[in-house]
Amino acid sequence: MTAIYPVRVEGRLDPGLSRWMWLVKWLLAIPHYIVLAFLWVAFAVLSVVAFFAILFTGHYPRAIFDFNVGVLRWSWRVAYYAYGALATDRYPPFTLNDVPDYPATLNVAYPEHLSRGLVLVKWWLLAIPHYLVVAFFVGGGTYVVWQSGEAETYPASGGLIGLLVLIAAVVLLFTGRYPRGVFDFVLGMNRWVLRVAAYAGLMTDVYPPFRFDAGGSDQAVVEVPADPDRGDQAVETGPATQRPEQETPGGSSRWTAGRIISVVIGSVLVMAGGGLLTAGAGALWVDQTQRDAAGFLSTDAERFSTTTYAVTSEPFDLQLSGPDWAVSQSTVGDVRLRAAGSDAPLFIGIGPADEVATYLSGVEHDEVTELRAGPLRPTYERQGGAQAPADPAAQDFWVASAGGTGAQSFTWTPEDGRWMIVVMNADASASVDTLLSVGATAPWLDNVAIGLLFAGALVVLAGVVIVLVAVRRAARA
Image (tube, rainbow, N blue to C red):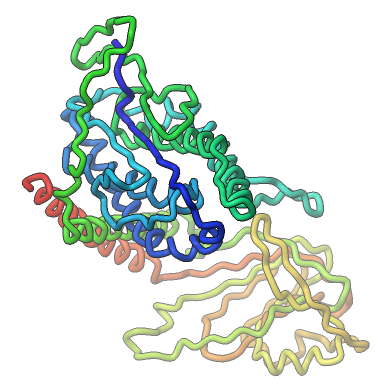
């Protein structure tokens, strides 16, 4: 059978648009962007709740449906005012409710029943072809740059909607008129995007049509397939049968400001708690599975080399002083530095920064100023000099050191002070080349992991309770 598509997106081009206001709408819309950032967090959390409700009952909870449609509606109004269309100068209202006289409207017919099977796949698998189209319309993705033989990726944005809106804005600036053809095309693209958003948001089982419906008015008609969960049979009716839409303009009125704020706060807590749980689980996994036989957590060995006499770290400060119950050797743990992979005998040591600086004064060496990840690449700053260094093993200021042929390592218990790490050839000759790794016992990691898990569970529980109370009250309104 055929019916009007359940997602209706419409826009009315305002006459007499200001030539210059679009230049500052990015500033005027900031309050909306801030509010929408929180509303979309709530949208995500409530969509998860709706997912399980549909999976087990076949119904999208009406109060949650009204809220999520309201978020889409609010987003469409802001996009229409700002750089998703620039088709009105009327400031968007701060409400989830339908505002029929606003130039941009969005309504979604409430589905009495949704497929329990489709909810498992439609938002990530079935919608993939549409996601590709949406990416073209709104932009996004990455581009790759090759630098020194290595690929680096950077985010890229911008799409056809943004390009056409920019063209319309420039035309408006110089002529005072918004090109009607551009408006119709921009509305068609936004309509496609919002239909996909509603489908991916589980609000309908009717697959978005691969049809470009341009213009401000939306009367799209689609074929509605049989619902296998209810045993419906699809019927070809020839001309479209326009059944009454189950819209409830103003249906979001049950969502008072207090309830909206409660859902946002609860959703933010759920997201924050989820982050704490993830961090805690990750820390616990590292603590329990990534230690070596000696109990150290270690970095991968990375190459450090120089044609000079030494490689050093930048001076670094440690301030571990505190109450005995808060900071002790057992809580700080030990640090291990290991050097290997060199044919020449090596020396590695750590000492007070001022004494190391005096020892290397006038000696040419490289100081590591930055470690870039992926893969790790050190950046050096050359320290000039014309002298050869004295025997490093003969110096008495090292607080921990090791030297000799083959792999070398030392273990050091951190303490207050300003320190530097030095890697040299044991005979004080030039050209140092070695693989270094750093390890730590981190005895505090298990307690941190447990604390994060406990705190995350409490925060998630608090957020869930707040959200459920607000949703329950909205459902009863």
